[in-house]
Length: 591
Image (cartoon, rainbow, N blue to C red; front, side):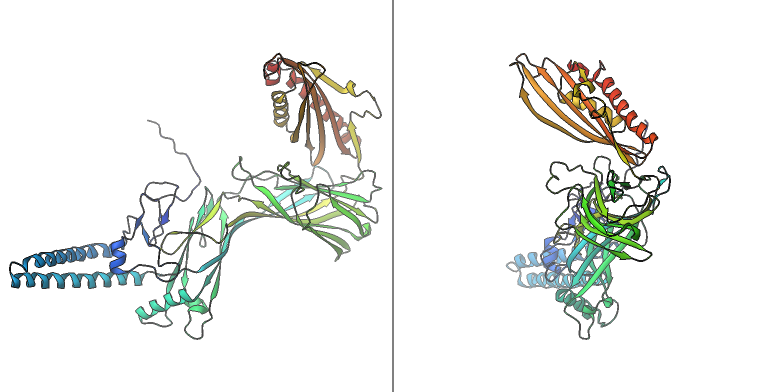
């Protein structure tokens, strides 16, 4: 029999059966347990010996245990069980004595006396043993919890040299931080003082436990001194906080907890999380500069990559010789919360600083949630010198983590799940500085292929006609072929079908747009697909014809880039011809 071992990312599972449905933690050893293997304190034990947690927040919760600890640590479990057996025997003698009193008063009273002394002594001994076990454990506290978050930092630097293909992104190792704020109050101080009274100490070390924070998901982090696994114990020494000190303590004290960790393996994003490309706006007399910011889809899960939540900061630094900023705008729209600050900075440069930029226009976000770019256009009083260099910084917040952590769960000091005031924040922050030379872009012109205004006014002369149905299967076949060839399809819009010139004809119209990069420079394409479907009474069309118009647009600075734009149109046209005329394709099957 062949056995194959598959490597999986670690995640919190029940210590006994491996179930990922963790119900509680053992409050002795913090082992995760599921419902089946959870051993809460018996109700009779809580009533007989008292609850393990007291005071507001804990008095109604039961302590949870794993099968190894079984309520008491291994060193005292056997002794406790023997004394409990003696107590049960004593209780039995009391019951027998009550019956024997009617038969023999002396024998009955003797049994009652022996049984009562045995039960009382057992109760005192077991309660003392349990108290000794509890005193040896940290004091269970129940502080207020606020601001629970996990943040991973991805820092890097982007440089663009004087040659257009010299674009580099250097990333630093990812660092993660788990942080939260705990507030100790009067109930926690009373718990610590009761423990100090039992120990008959005043200022000696008294260990406490405020519960555990558990990382959720299949993740890969490197265990170290601060984070040694997915279960983070929230314990410490009461002497470190003013609220537990005897002399004039405050009403509360804050504990700002922060634990740092590193990733087990760095993510495969050598191309960088964002691309920043400058360009001089055509026909602007070299007085306008556009900064195109494009963020890539990346993350541990290819099906659910990290998504951009907000660009917290976009800072642009440029030479003072360009003059003051006359106007700036975000081409995709701007949030009402966005703020802009401009001014002089040292070393003969000016700056423009924008904060809280949304990834897309809020009005369009529901229709175009896949938006992955933002373009900043700035107009200056003077001219942009192509020999200069711009620099700046970009800070963005992404939903999700590079390690694979999907959330945080909090358990109280008795091992029971505890709700948070609000959902824990789990984010990735991207902090990238950039330094970009303008020598390779210079002043650009725009090339549109085909150029109908200069070459031919007949629109249909640039269309190709195919004997296929202009339906969704045709569009899917075409967009799949473009994606496989490296094209980024930005949107596919279908206009509502309309009746044709005959009752059995239906007219269809599709709008497809996207982009492809040559190096760091974008070339946009726009495809219009129209046609007619022929129906013979069935829902599906019997046949149809389709026309395809293709337009390619890009900026160029020299003849080589102009040729690339022309070649891109030819390649896209050849790809369309090959896809829609292929006999075995989904589109071809419809015809």
